[in-house]
Amino acid sequence: MDIEGGSNWQKYRPGNEPYLGARLLEGLPYLCGKRGKFVVGLFAYLRWVDDVVDENNYLTRRQKLVFLERQMGIVGGFAPEKVLSMEETFSELPWECVPEKEVRHRVNIILGSVADDADHQGFKVRTDREVRHYNWRTIWPVVDCLFLVLNGKPMREDASMMRLLDAYMKIGSLEGLADDLQQGVVKLPMGSDCGGNTSVDEVLERYDERMFYREKVKNLREIESNLGAFMRLDIPSWQKFACIVYLGRTLLKKTLFMNRGRAVRGL
Image (cartoon, rainbow, N blue to C red):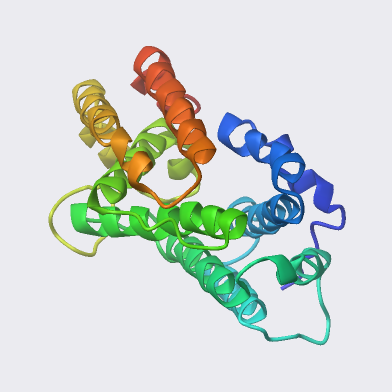
């Protein structure tokens, strides 16, 4: 397995992302100093890992999982003889300014969710429960790690916050339906039975115009009804305000512009 990639870590910075939420992270070094720089560097490392797994079709499923096992080892403290440039970027983050043990634990949970995606390539079916747990394993450590780095302590979420995060992920999976299917991954529930495989046609048949709209409305309402969860987090007021404004903008944008036609474009 030959993986280089990332000799210029700048290409993976959040400012190069198409999503506003990611691009806003570029301002954190100005607001939070070294902790903000840590967030930018960690984002770049995780974006590189995700790109290696998602964009390199020449890698087999097994090779992707071996690569992710290597990254989990590095995050856990293993030092390989030959270090790739983005792995070096991760090691050189200003660890002295964050709770290192807790942050490394969150990063490994994030890598575990990437491995889950790699393991589910080939249109493996997920149930409602599996999707909900996958969403939590994916988004919770990202959000909690962000606040842990910025504030030096966990955000202390409640059940309402977890419902919001699950709904937010489901909206992303609806909107990114074409991209996921092109990678052979299904992140939306397909039924109550565990195991088995599906196909692009079966997913599109299940998530027709009616089902897509129903799921969109249900999850946007779930986000709206749980927005107050941010006010109960153990984070500074300015961060609560920023999160609520961002999600309010997201609700408006998805309500007006998100539809099945755009979500399946390119298939």
